[in-house]
Length: 440
Image (tube, rainbow, N blue to C red):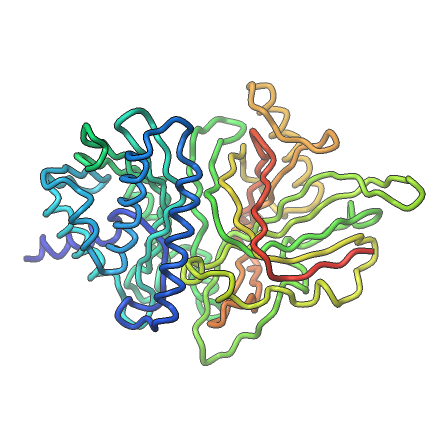
């Protein structure tokens, strides 16, 4: 019996797909269920748009049906999964192998029941994309967010994909193979076990959920990683003159904060704090130009809110449209966006993430990546790069408002900061609305 319990716990930790809700399905209001279903529909539409040109429409429809069925399964409803899988379908994951659909569905149910955390954070699935690999094979990419039942309430986000082998007519799935962005042992060590930053900040802010990064390759000078698609609050401004070189914390500007934190309520935190920077040219009156830089703060929504429609989220503008522009800032804005997946060449930097250290790292990574034949994205001749601070986290209150930012005081040798140079193509987020903007 003890062995069965341990196996159930491990399977519950790492089963298939993703995303997180703090309310169990039975406790959702009709409004919440409607919003959740609305998100599922939008996810299916986005996934359909990413199916490779020329893919069989029937195969793509089957893959999207699988994604919806897994979304339902992680909400406690396995009805659709019983339909989309062939009875003899085999399923292989990094933890276990099921010889048929019945066994697989039983494992899913067991995992959901173990992790549903009534009254806290239940697991939820978000489908990121569906693509054709080859005739008869489809790939469903997803993110799984859950809370491990522990005193420190570990948040686990798994970025993974399911490779589906379809029947000859493309209407049924005969086998499923799952892959995760981290091995189970790494997930346990880096996400379930208490981290140093979780322990030292436990009494002032909850354990943060981390945005998962898939490591595509590793080298001595940098690693190539993929940052998954996400829904986020995006604040930005265009700065000139002294602000180009002055030291600035990676924390978002004041106009990104719209809420307050009450000691009596639970709130969610997300790490790392991400700041995208690129060189640009400011157009001035009279046809003049000025060297400028765009700073773009990206604040991913916690998994508990990532399934909501924009209509069910609060206005993200904390003053961008009304507050005076800071000195040397030409424009500022904040809004909800859906960012596509992006590939980066990254490496950690030691010590304080000063402007000098961050810029030097970005140039060195760009030079090394270019020498290796990778396409580095540049604007006005300079690389577009991302600064990621794991010593900082953004806090959302129970009303989905950004209410706080925590930047831990950590000795310089223990600070954890990463610089990533954008590869392949410029990331153009989809603007979802809300927020405000102002310009000089």
